[in-house]
Image 1: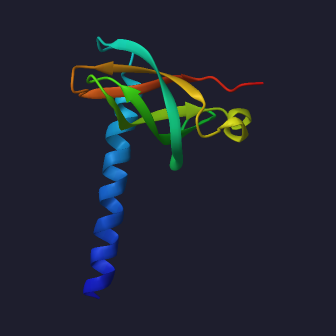
Image 2 (image 1 turned 90 degrees about the horizontal axis):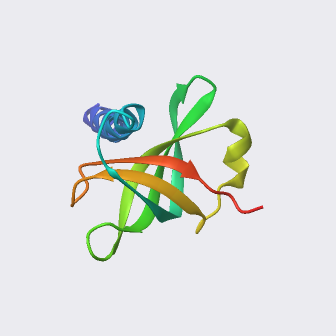
Length: 112
């Protein structure tokens, strides 16, 4: 029983982080920040949708603090955009502060 409770609580922790990232994406037009490009590393689909779009938590490389580091942020993707995700593809992000306190993915630029 104790193991079951531990697994449930661990799952909630991951969802809480996702919710925070998604809140930053939803409010991205309301906060000040810089816009730059980054390189997609990996992605994970969440259970959350926005209209007909699906939220993903993406991990990417960006030079925001004087050196390239990994960061995470939410992205909302249309169903047709999901198969176009490729490791190394360029993405456009908005971030606030150094080190970043808020980050949101503005767009993902699939190469044709």
